[in-house]
Structure formats: C-alpha cells, structure tokens
Image (cartoon, rainbow, N blue to C red; front, side, top):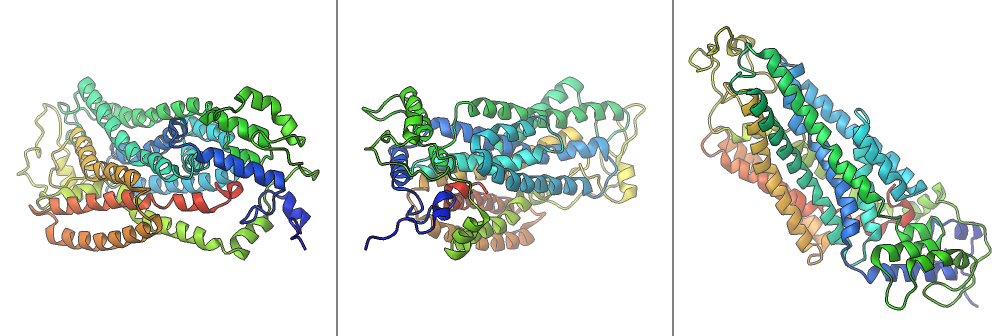
Length: 501
C-alpha cells in the first residue's frame, strides 16, 4: 500500500511545517523548492547580497560602539564633576536593552511581512531616532544575517555570513577613526590644547561648546552608512525560498532569484518569468520542469504556535537553538564586557606606572593662563579624577589628549585584533569543521581568560604592562575567529519561516 503523502490536511496547508523531508508540501511544491534550492546552489559568493547586508551591519556596529567614543565628551560637557560612571552604565544598559527589543520584535515582523519590507524601516529608525535608535540596531542584526543566509548558496553561506559579520569590528574601528577625525577638526578650529580644556577654568564655556559638537557629529555620522544601506535595499528582493515557502508565489520566487543571480543558459528572462507567474500558480508547467498539477487547497497560512511546538519540542530541534543561543549569550557576556565603554579598562591596562599623586608637584597644579584657575586642586580636594579623565598617570592631560589616547588604545588593542580574527575565519570557514572549531575556540578562550587575569595581576602598572595588552588583544582575536562559527548553525538548521524569529 502506497504511503499517505498528507495524513493531516491542516498540517499540509500550513507552510510553517514542512517536515524534515518536505512531506508536508504537495508534489509540485516539493519540486519547486528543490529546483529553487538547486538554482541557489549553482552560484557562489554574491557581491550584491553582501553589499546590502554588510552596509546595514556596518551601520549597526558603528552606532552601537560609538558609545565608546562619545561618553567621555558627554561626561565632560554635562557631568564634569561626576566621579562614578553612572551615565556610561545607563547608556550601555539602554543600548543593549533596545537592541534586545528590536531583535525580538523585528524578527517576528520580518517573518510575517517579509525581510526586505522591514529592512528599510529599521534603517530609518537608526537615522531619525534618538531613543529608538537601538531598536533599529537590534532589528538590523538578525535581518542582515538572515537575508545573507537565505540568499547564499550552501557552499558560500559560511563565507558570506562571516564576511557580513566582519563589518562589526570594521564598524568599531570606523567609529573610533571618525572620532579622531572630529577631535582633530575641533582642535584645529577651537584650539582645545591652547585653552587647556578640562584642566583650566578660564575657557570653560568655550571648551564645552567645542566638545559638545564632537559627540553630536560622531553620532550623526552614523546616518551615512544607514543611508547607503537604504539605497542598496532597493536592489534586493525577498529570498526565493521565503517567497515560495511562506508567500506561496513560486513564479515570483524564481523571477527574483534570476534577477539576483542571472538566468542559467537557455532559461527565460526575468521579464518572461514575471509574465508566467500567474500561470504557474494556476497549475501550468514549472519554469524549470514538466507540469505537475498544483493542489486546489486554500492558500497556505503562516506558521502557527503548534508548528513551532512540533518543530522545536516534538522533533527535538530545541537542542540546536539552545546550544547556539546559550553559547552566544555566554560569549557576549565577555565580549560586551570587554568592548562597551571600556575606556577606563584600556587606560588601566596600558598604565606602566602607578597613578600620579594630585599634589602641587604637578606641572598643571597652578594655572599657566592669565586669569585662569587650574582644576587639579579641586580634584585633589575631592579625592578622585572626573569620569572623563581615564588615565590617572597623566592627570594633566586635556580633554583633547584624553580623547586621542582613548582612540589609540582602542584601535591597537581591540580593533586590529578583531579585524584580523574576522578575516582569518572568512578564510578558514570552509576549511574547518565548524562545530568542532566552536568547541575548540571556547576552550581556547577559557584558558586565555585565566592566563590574561594572571598576567594582569602580575604585570599591572609596571613596565611589563604591555604583556596584558597583548593578551587582551589575543582574546579579541579569538572572539572574532571563534564566534563567527555560531551564526551558521541557526542559519543551516532552522526553517525559513522561523529563521529571523
């Protein structure tokens, strides 16, 4: 007796539950899906797909890690007497909270309305919002990865996703470089060093006006890559697999795929595909294969809660999601702890001597500007430095020197190592077993953290302090060389209708 293809009509009608062997689809749907997957796998790395997703990811990273650049300026202007970094902590909390809300909400909406339709909306949030900017950032992260994953062929998926994730350390470095450029420009215009901004009160108001513009320009510059991403977005369509499996439009799916990758030899043009779309849905021959009649069932619906329960609980796929999500969570505890508002940490790592005493022996204890007053005696009376002054070995540094020093330390310790790690994984993605490498990289990081902690306690505030800087840089290298194995797991294991959610 022949097996029953669709024992549950409701399950067959719901495209969120396809079955591990696509048995929930009709014969024509299975044929279309196989043919579309085959068409995608004929292609390799695609510049258009990468450009769209990478520009969005660059925008996210720039705006997310721009907090490292702007917190010192904000503290200098608005909280000059603050001794504890409450403002930086609050900014980081709301930054990450907004990103979480954006990821969860836009992940669901992207499954419901389509990837590219939401892709422009969250970029607009990044451009025009203040409070909502991190909602857009959180939304951009899953959308960029999912669009890349769904459009990529099997052979190029790992390298394309890791190439998109390369934009994270590039965005971090770009934020620092833009910050340096703005600081140099303000110095040339306002002469921050000559006014001794931060360590003398004579030009206090002029200094605040000049420094206030620094963080505003840095944040506003983040709109530039977002605008580029919006422009690129108009040259991209929803992936054919999403259009076929969720929207049930095989003609549109094949047409859009050929628009991105081009039609194979002897195949009709995209214009002809569009004209044939209605005939396909009506039961005519597939664009790629002989006619197989379509079912007369009603149009499929989006996946249901029961489908998700079956897929993750009954079929045991929760194991893969939990494994990927938990590893990402535990690593990000360390990653963001090392990367967000780490100005004070980096300054401490780079210290090759103990903190200077705030005494009259300092060259800046007395004002060298006529009619001015040094701020150092005030700091001495309060017993600590202000938040923006992150290097206690150099209390005579002006805000200009502090901002330049922070950028240099970040670029040398974090950015260079992170970019190198990302680039190495792109090269190694298809040459190593990713699951095994994920395990190995976590083990390596475990030992690196222990060694780094020991090196810090042995070398901190001595001439051997650069050893700690090197160890932290190595940690950032393996953050990026190891963690880029993670995105390929949900991208490969989860059904298209639930991929962003």
